[in-house]
Image (tube, rainbow, N blue to C red; front, side, top):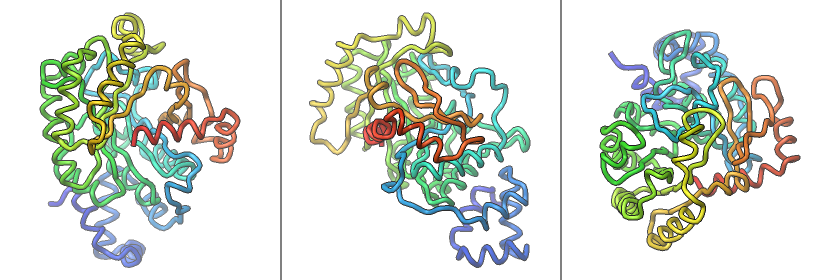
Length: 355
């Protein structure tokens, strides 16, 4: 029996109008489509609404906000000491329902042309009603609205059928993390020896499947050894990574990135700037971009973050600024808030440095 993901891939070979006709009549492939969507966590009514409702179409270049990150879960199988996801999900005991996430996606698709699914680990998200992982369903909803999807993941739960599914949707980038040139050094942050192996095995798979790959390294007191950073860069070059982004760790008020971790994991601005300048010069002229994000950059080029509660914030180094709620506000209201804070241009800078 085909998996829901495999059924979705097969549907792409069918002319959309024919699919709509058979779904409406609930015959043949239309009945299978409804069933597969139900297996992925959607009700029949929601499936029909999403299939027949018309959504605004536009290219990324025409969007007012170039890039937004949508947190889909706070849960993760790793426990990285520099992670601040716990702060974003404080007080949430379970993941938001699929229906709520789809409403947020519909809002964001009127705001931006690029949506990054992030967490936590996006593939351990569970819809509380169906008790299934619905991440690929969310990918499908974004793609149906002609928007680009970016997958930020540890990569440890990805399978070949998942990649085949994403290749048939509007997924352009995968964003992974690597904090050392070998399993031992990487596990100092990730706390899992297999995380290194899985990442370096996954990158060639992603490239051969046609995806662009960004690998992020967070510079902390554990990962700031010059020799190791050079080896990570050389490994990224060898594997064909498109963008190696080095981010300076900064402490947060809550989560694992707070308290004692905020103090001992931090690296001085001078050290971060000198090492990243050297690394950029070292790999200059290569196909791989080397981009950086310092603590100061968090203020000058912030990120637009959306929580599963609908809360929208612009994240600065000094703290998050509330700009609206995707479940209660209109997109035009959020745009006005961003314009009043000069946030749109600075978010564009962040997006261009990242993807």
